[in-house]
Image (cartoon, rainbow, N blue to C red; front, side, top):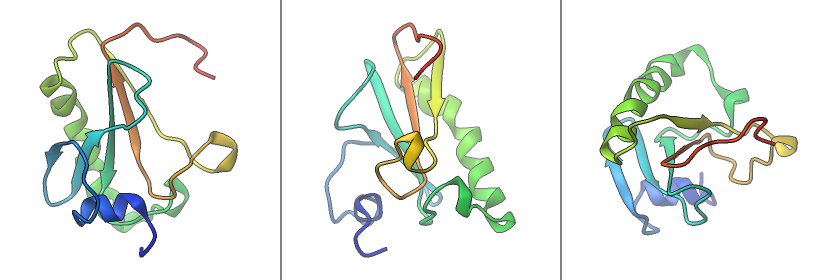
Length: 113
């Protein structure tokens, strides 16, 4: 997508503090962290939100989910983390590229919002 900021980060057109990358996903620090560790994990394939996921995306999203624990461990998260995916306007999805917030290194509250 031409105007997608996450696609531009994936394509290295915009710099980001990348902490993990492979052929399928990219993980980088959020510019407005809400926890001591706040990463964004994105599939490299542009999907606007969870509403755009098709059966052909299962392998990539399964891979992303399987890598979350490794990415969390690489950041020293040892006692738990929260993984958040906002889907749509009412959920406050501000970037229209499927992404997951990995938050850790602090006690989380419930309900979250």
